[in-house]
Length: 223
Image (cartoon, rainbow, N blue to C red; front, side, top):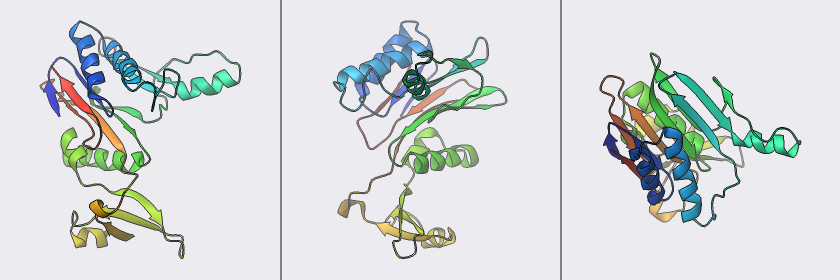
């Protein structure tokens, strides 16, 4: 977790890339400069193993001076390229942008986040609910206990909610109204927890608070 006033960068993979993005901001770069520096550094530092220079990318950009929001959906770019259409798509205004989201309050952006991993939906909705309804900070949301990706009972075909053993009161688990299974993380490889990174801005003070996933080679930096 990192706190600052001027700029912040958070990544789910490779903390050195976050520091490269922060350096771009410190040199007077815009949010786009910081984001692209971080993304390109991630590819170089991982030798293109999990990500590459040509892949799926989603981007949401808010320009504070004009109040305009721009989005880029590179998944749509890939589909358009396969059809032989114009190989670039940039649009202003509210448009679906996969798993990169910016949330505003009273016209001011208060949260930007991205999520990834097989359980991105579980982690995203859990963190958002805590941030928006209970006033959690972004790092409190990330550090909250996981609801792992559900499994299916082959006999009933009904979903089973998987949770870490001992992390939730029994009354809470029974109150869900769903079948559940408590799993001991140290005894089983539980997949599907997803990765969630976020940066929040206090609309009153302007303070930035960045947090990154606590279960990966990640980093959050700010100044």
